[in-house]
Image (cartoon, rainbow, N blue to C red; front, side, top):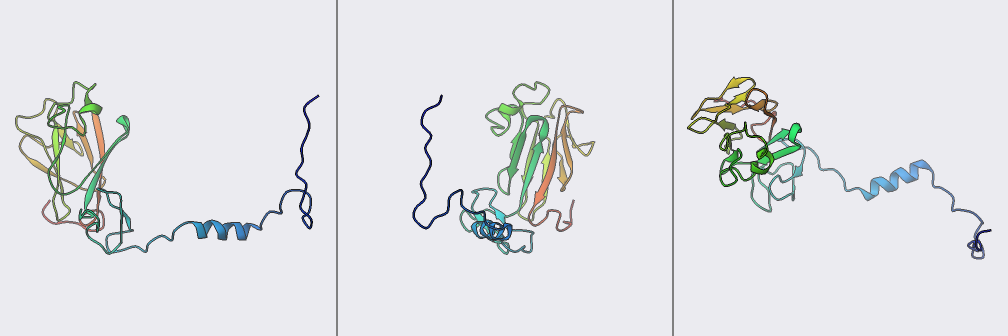
Length: 190
């Protein structure tokens, strides 16, 4: 009852039916050839894309050759808000609900009135150390590192794997430190 059925007529010398499948070893070799080779690990771990401009950075490089950003950076992950913040040395990363003071988080924290407008700020030093500071006057719900309060106007050292929390149960981040000063070495002074 359907319309006409068409079949492809093989060219002279071709067999009927689909082309033969290649052996799994050949398929695997072809897939490997299509993927670029992974760079070898360097002194600060594996090569990765620059956190700032997303261009590749060779393992031995301490700075991105494209934008000159250092490999050192921190990643703050907040699964509850599906929020991940990446920050490197330079001006502090400000966290809060104030869209002028904390533009990176104001929208994500906007519906959370218990987060202060100026909750905390993160600083990454060129040596790889990462710090959190609660501004003065203090935030209403305090900032905690691994359950310990930071205190207004004081800095607390953040290390790879630390938990950064705003309020007792409002928002929490997992801290990852990458590059020199990260999990590859223990930095003095903190």
